[in-house]
Length: 314
Image (cartoon, rainbow, N blue to C red):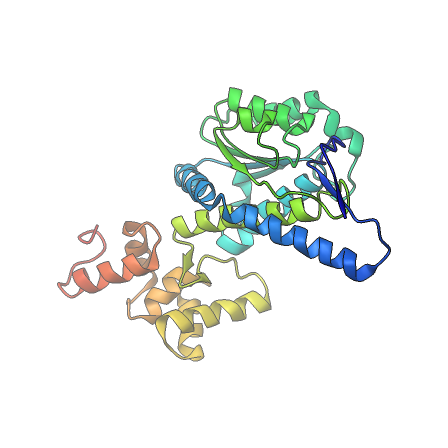
């Protein structure tokens, strides 16, 4: 097994590549697994940067700003996937989440390789979002030099957005532009130039951590559970019932009754199942606690024992 130094294949490809000169499936599988292990290790090495960026995203969301995900090729698909999951997982308003891809999002799985070279299109796509002074842009590019993504990030910064750059090369235009950088030194790809593999695994893990830590800061995760999920199908309604039952330590029947009282919203349902008398008071305690269930319950117990409502407990 040899290493091909400084293999620059351009676009969404990056780094040196392991040359697996073999038709042995087991050896190739081992090489792929080794590259995945390095990719995940690269995420662990920048977990502090991811946490810091997540806190900044949470602050922007609380202040009413938008989250804009930008990418091209496989990096664009990774960005789009993370963005698309936020409304369902954390109950975030989908009208405040934008996905910017070359050619738009009408057919996101038809990747036009030439479109990622169109820097002007990247600028235009961001310009269409107008004022970004309250917003955050998460720009993802394996090489850190994809023209569409770099131009979009530069235009976003010019318009006042917080730019978080995710790339795999330490010296790259995207990381130079970014206010906060997440450098994923994921190493060689077992399949030369195919950054959907190791680099893609690192991107998925990093973006998942970034958005989940933001969700934690916003109070949308409690005891490792999705307490602000959008329960819009039978599976998720059952999950919501299980979440309420687990946190409040009540029966499924009592959890279901609390959810009905709360109109299907998990957080107030938890408080109702724990003894808060009605939806209005549950929402009040959550409001003064910044959406955090544990703090809302603590305040309710301390102040409620004195006959004080949420306004007194603020």
